[in-house]
Image 1 (cartoon, rainbow over the protein chains, first blue to last red):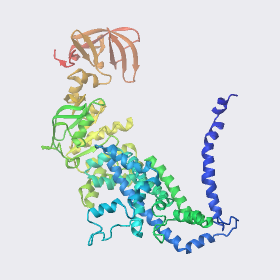
Image 2 (cartoon, helix red, strand yellow; image 1 turned 60 degrees about the vertical axis):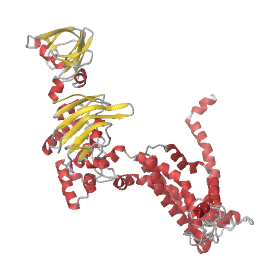
Image 3 (cartoon, each protein chain N blue to C red; image 1 turned 180 degrees about the horizontal axis):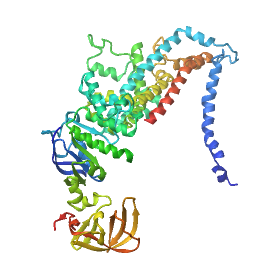
Image 4 (cartoon, one colour; image 1 turned 45 degrees about the vertical axis):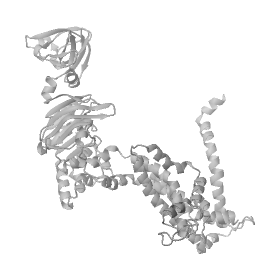
Length: 306
Length: 333
């Protein structure tokens, strides 16, 4: 039998084509996941790799750890504020981008750009924007007279110290994260809006509904599955992401004002060398996130039907 | 209820002349059918009535008021879409109630009116269901109820029967005509199905290439076509055409019969070579040729015809229509 004849057989070709992805998932997703699962029940560290099973004490320790609880709270603030902004802003952008207007391509280009730039690189750009001394935003504010003069609205000091003040640092992290999630939300919502039959919108128009009534009574209810997908996808991305936090603040300013679970796990497990604690932090919300992922998949199916 | 008027209405999409100069007056309470092949501009014309498109030129007048720049919701029109366009997430009740809710009517008034419309269309038992839970025919009734519940001045219908299966379509057509008479609302109805047009319309406007080729009562459209387009478009099978010098002779298949069966003296006789006979139960369609022209005879009588043989067929002189070969217009003789 010739090679090509063997390759034509589905029982040979199918496993062959699946093999790379299966191997990838096994080695780069499955293996680390199982290892971290095992580690989280041990007392393993970088310095002392002897494995000793210690039950769930890593997890019970966490619940009593002030820094962990702070990171947990930060993670929730970071996630929910980001998602809220992403849903609202991406809907507005989608409504703009489904229309025809002059210069649409450049708007679309600008909206999609964060998605094409490497996250770390884009975030470094923001790092400069938010610099404590040379921030162009501060410069603009000073020029507008809002900052750096006695009696100015934003205070007499010469800089805002965006990443140095706890509340401002959290706001900065959230805004940069929203900036990078927006393209995803926008693309999903554009697809969703385009899948609503034109006749339904026109029927509502003829029935006398103005723009906002159509939006809230017809479009948004019909977009519910799609918005659900956007929310859950972004939640998963946000909950498990540490890039923006790490590049901008490394979890600071002290103490741990913008620390989130992902960055804390990295800090403890990799930088601090306590692999067991790091694994426990990373896995803490695994059940919740797995549940969310399951809902995403179901919703995505439903959204396709509509 | 209202009179609707179009004066020199044009609608261009770039270089495409979708509607290219239409004058039309629809009387109060009249049922006018816009009939034409796809791409003839009939749907665009209806969308102009509705306000979903703005005319490039001309005036649209509803109830004595120029509505060119008026948005759909101020025009007092209602529309039934081809796909019905029901709101999939709202119950039948809420679908019908939507236009009233938009108007800001009180809850009890809405309920009363919805029940009136639902009663009219015999869908009272479906009010709590979702559109996906009712049949195609019922969906269409819901769409009509939603259109009627506001008591519109003008009711627009865009091929509302085309998504129904053949049996339901027949009864739906009858009912549609009955309650349009009952309510007496001015109705514009778009279709490419001439059976619907003949059965429903008080008057039919036959459209092609963005203009109205003829407007008249169904009888005139069928028997006195104004040009070759109307003659060829209306009627199944279409009118037979035979080239003769500078004119074209046209006659309907059911008037083209064996000479001996026509009790008249003023006949035009032809040698008709039958090529194929199609037996359709109550009548037969005989496809054949006269000279070089392909013609059809619609034979409902028992008369023996065989494929491949030539017969002596005739048309009464009064049943023949003449058309100008150059511009296709009707010539009186």
